[in-house]
Length: 595
Length: 45
Image 1: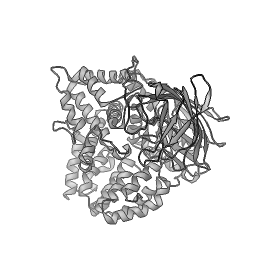
Image 2: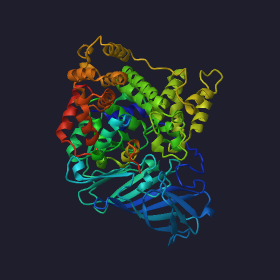
Image 3: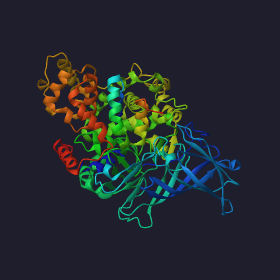
Image 4: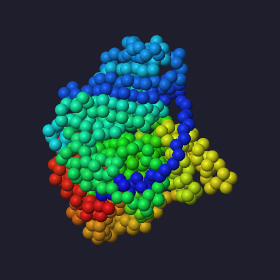
C-alpha cells in the first residue's frame, strides 16, 4: 500500500497534553511479583543469540523502585529459565552476590524466582539462559525461511511469555524503559521493540534503547537475515532480503495530507518511529503491536483489505493498549475492544462508511456465532482468569464485544461527545496501566452519570459482567451484505446455482459474509459448483480461505482435503519463493488497494 | 488457523485425520500454537 502509513498517522494523531496518575495494585493473579513492595523501572539486557544452542544467554539488570524497602526481597517471573547467578548493588554502590531460590515449575505460570537482598538494592543482575523450548521464542531452521541460508528467531511475549526469555515482573501493571546490547553470529541482524538502526552492523553487539515505559508483554526481539528499507520519514520495513522490495511496495511512500490530518482523533503518536517487521509464516498471529516495530505475518500480503485491517489494528494499539494498557489480563478488552473500535474508525476514514459497516456486520455475526460455543463465563468482557493461562481464555469477545459496546456509546452520545472522552482517556492515561473500574469512573464522570444520559453505568454491567450481548444492542446493517443474504438464501434453496450468484466481483467482505452464512448449510455438491466457478480451494486470501475450509469440513467436501492438508502444514514448513509473493502483491494493486 | 483444527476436532473421523496431519505440521509450528493444538487434539501429556 503506497502512502498507507502516512494516511493512518494523519487520521489518528494530533497534539495533546500528557498528565499522570498511577493506580496502585498489590498483586496480579498471573505474576509472582509483590507489586506493593518493589517495581522494576528500567531494564538493561546484555544477551547473546545462539542458534546452535537455540538459546539467549547473558544477564538482565533490573533498576528497582522500592515501595517497601524493608521487604528486602524481589520476586520475579520465569519459565524454563536457567539461573546461573544473581548479584545486587547495595545502597552504597558496591556489588555483592545475592542468594536466590527458583520454585517448582507451575505448568501455567512458570517458576517464581525469589532473590534475597541485604537492603533495598537499587539494581539487581540476573545471569541466565533460556531453554530451547522457551514458550516465548521460536527458533526456525534455514529451510523454514524465505532465503533458506540462515536461521531465524523471533519472540512473542503476550500474554505471559516474556518470562520465558527474561526474568521480569511479567505483568502489564509494571512498566519499564529498557536498553539492550545483543550479540549474534555474523550475518545475523537483531531487531527489538525499540529504536532500530538500519546502518548498524552489529559489531560489538546491536544496541537498543526504548525510552518510553512499556509493560513486559511488549518486550520483543527477532534475529535473522533481516534487511531494512525506508518507506517514510519515520518508518522502515524490516524483513528477509528476498521479501523486502515486495513489502516496501506494499507499505511504502509518504505523502503529507492536510485533509486527513484534520481528522486527527486520538492525540499524538508518542513512540517516535513506526516500523514494521514481516516475519516467516509460522508467526502465530496476524500481527503483534510491539511498540516502534509491529510484528506482522507474511500471509497479510494476500491481495485484499485483510492487510489494511491488521496494520490499522496494530497501529491503533499505539494508543489503546500500548499507551493506556490493561492493568491485568482480565481487562484485556480495554486493549482489544478499544483497538478494534479504532481500527474500524480508521477503515471508515480510509475506505468509507460502506466498508466499515460491512466489517461491523461480519464482526457482530461472528461474535454471536462464537459465543454459542463459549461457556457463559468466557462471554463477559471482564474475564474470569483465576488459575488459568490467559491464552486459554482469549476469544473474539474482548475484541468484538468490546468494539460493539464502545460503538453503542458512540451512537448514543454522538461522535463529538464520545470522541472527546476517548481522546482524553488516552491522553490522561498515557504510559499507564488501567482497569475496567477506572474506565467506568472515567466514562461515568464524563458521560454516563449525567441526568439526561441516554445510557447509564448500570447498562454497561450487562456488557462487562454478563454473558451474551444486551437485548437492546444496536445491530449494524449493510445493504450490500443484505443483498448477499438474499443470494445465499436462493443458493441454499436451489433457486440459483453458483454461476447465477455473479460473485466474480465480490469483495473479501462479501465472500466472508456469504461463507459465514453458508457454513451451517454447506453441502458437498453445491461446494463443488462454487469451486468450479470461483476457484475457492486455490484462493490465496487468508480470510476467504479459512471460511471456505471451515464450510468444507462441515460439508465433508473431500476435493479440498489435499489443499487443506497443505495449508495446515505449510505455516511452519519451507516457504514458497518470492515470485509467488510478488504476484499476490500485483493482485492487490489490481484490486484497487494501491492508494 | 486454530479454528480449522477446532472444527476438525469435532468429529472422530476428522479428528483422526487432523492428528495425522498435525504429526507432520507440529515441528514447524510456534510453541504457543503447539500448546493450544496439543490441548485441542487431546495430545497433552
